[in-house]
Image 1 (cartoon, protein in one colour):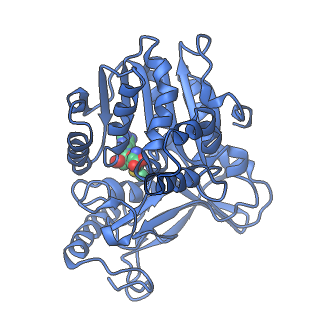
Image 2: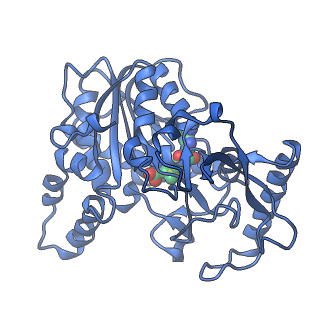
Length: 398
Ligand SMILES: C[S@@+](CC[C@H](N)C(=O)[O-])C[C@H]1O[C@@H](n2cnc3c(N)ncnc32)[C@H](O)[C@@H]1O
C-alpha cells in the first residue's frame, strides 16, 4: 500500500493489520465467485473481528490528527449535548421508564455525561444498558465511565443481544450512519448494483479492490430508486440493514421512546435527482474523502441516513414517529442555550470553548441542519409531547 497524497501514512503495524483484513476480504470475494455487494465489503471493513475499523484498536474518536483520531462526534465535542438530551429524557424516566439503552456507545462519553446529567436532573435511571458490536470499544466505555462517573458506573451493563422486550428510553448517536449500505449506479439509463471485486494487477495503483457494477433486472431494482426520475447517471445507496435495525427496535420497544441522531435526509431529499453522486464518505485522520478501498480497517466508512426508510420500517413494526427535527431545532427546543447560560460568560476559559462547541452543534453550516433527530415511540405520546420537537417538527416530510 502506498501513501496517498496529502493523507498521513499509517504506522507499520496498522498497515500490516490492514493487509491482513484485505486478505480476508479477498477470501470472501473468492468464496462468493469474484464479487461481493458493497454492504458486505463495508460490514467486513468496519466490523470484521479484531481487524475491522470498529473492532480494531485505532483511536477513531478525537479532536485532531495529533491524537491519531479520524473524526469527532457531538458527545465528544461538549457535555452540553448529553446535558440537553438529558432534559428531554428526564420526564420520560419520571414516567416509570427508569431504564436506558444506548446503541453504539463509542468511547462511553455520552453514557457517562447522560448519567451525570440525569442525576443532576433528579431522574437517574436504575439501569443503563449498552449494545456495542466492538469489544475494543466496550473496554474504552468501561474506562470512560470509571473515570468520569465512578459512582454511577455500576448501573451500566453491556448486552450481547437485543432483549426481547424493553421498556425505557433508547438512544443512538451516529449509529445508523455506520450500518452497511448497498450501492447502486444508474449508467446509460440502467440500474446496476455496485459491488466489490479484486483490482486487476497493476491497474488500480495501491488498492487491492475496485468497484464492479452488475446489471440489475428491472423487477429487482429497489423501490426507493424508482423515485429518481430521468435517465441521467446516478450513484446512490439503499439501507436494508438500518431498516432491519429499526424493525428490530420496533419489535423490542414495548413502551418508551427511541432517539436516533445522525446526518441524513428524508427520502425526497436523499433521492433528489440533483443528488447524483450519493453520500458515501470515508474519514481518515480528519480528512473526508470518497475512497472506501483506502487502508481497509483503518478508516471509517459511512453513508447518510434515509430517515424516511427508518420511519417507515419503525412504523411497520408498530412504533409511532413522535418527532423529526434538525439537531439545531431539537437542541434549542430542549434548552441547550439556557444550559449554556448557566456558565459564567465572564469566565472566558470555561465559557468560550463550550460556547464554540455548542455553536458547532447548532450552526447551519456545521452540524445544526445536516444532523437530524428522530423519535420513535410506543405507548407514551398521548401522555407527553416531546419538548425537543415543540417547534420545527418535520415529521410530515418523512
Ligand atoms: C460513528 S460511531 C458513534 C459512536 C458514539 N455513539 C458517538 O457518538 O461518539 C458508530 C458506533 O455504532 C456502533 N454500531 C454500529 N452498528 C451497530 C449496531 N447494529 N448495534 C450496536 N452498535 C452499532 C459502532 O460499533 C460504533 O460504536
